[in-house]
Length: 141
Image (tube, rainbow, N blue to C red; front, side):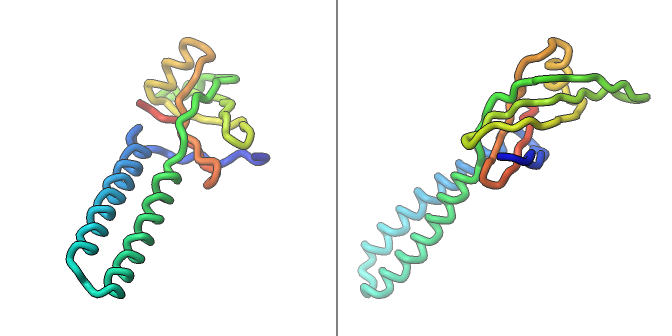
């Protein structure tokens, strides 16, 4: 990766987990549906058509599974504190490893995980990275 990927905001740590659970449950239901279609004794062309439709949905669910991204430890290379009138924000320079080479990125926020990391100096922040879509997000537990 040459250019820095875009940071996205996660609503919770379970974003990728929910995506994978949905895909797994759907694929299991599709397998059950395929068995039910075969057992019903429909004409061969109807069974083949239903099997094709279920196969397409299964491929979509596999794509959803693999698009969830990967959790990696983002190393804090540099950090700074910004005092504002009503809150303190912390700005980090992170080194985020990725399958096809890592990259540096900047993250700025005032959440508890980030403030604790800044107070202890250096350290790591958990990052969800998706190199295919070129996005990343700090996971605030």
